Amino acid sequence: MTADRPARWFADEWTALLGTVLESLAGERPKLTCTAPASGATLAASSEEMVGRHGAMLWWQHRFPLPGEPSIWIGAPRDAWTQLATRVLGAAGVEDDSQARETYLEILQERVAWKERILLPLGEHLYIVQKGRDRIVKCDCGHEFGPYSENWKLAASIYVRDNEEKLEEIYPGARKCDPNWMEIREYYCPGCMTQLETEAVTPGYPVVFDFVPDLEGFYRDWLKKPL
Ligand SMILES: [Zn+2]
Image (cartoon, rainbow, N blue to C red; front, top):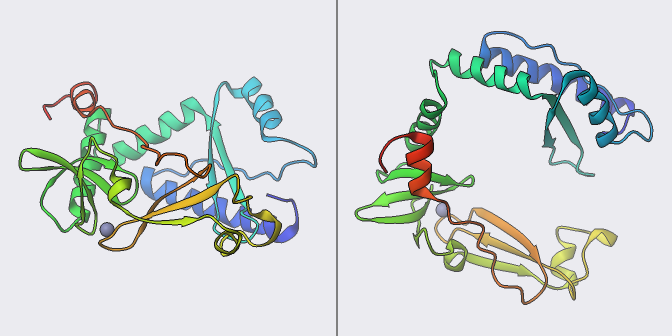
């Protein structure tokens, strides 16, 4: 964030709120400080200085949907993240990692209106579910895309921004890319029209298949239970 006063105020308020949220999750308030970068400072340089003092740092970038795309970087030593996660999970009555993953899947299952068992979430709205003998990709609205081993994007509603006019709607002025070199593809659920994914690629580039998860390995090695 830039170091001007409204930004500084916003960052301080946000940091205080984060402290309250963490306190409500973990039962203890962690010590949080918010510093505006010195002029010309880079994240890499600040990070390096802190690594010297505290050991390996893990960073999380929190973006705000505001003009100018401001963001706050939250950094803490690896040990601090681990301790925080252990306390949050402990406060929720979860004692080990595989139990935490299972609890997460249970929470997701409670949020959806359908009955098929969620095997793995794929982003914010999609899940791989067990339907009879098939494993398919399903949206939280209930729309089904087909077998998880195939690219769900090919069964989505697609909108391609491949000219100046369409790009101008989201990247006004000089910020937009040259449509001769790059286009933006937006993938929507045909059931609820939620935007599920976007990709920025060279025109003509094949539809990107993000990943095929190793479901068997995830259940065997991480959840330690049969699929
Ligand atoms: Zn949907």
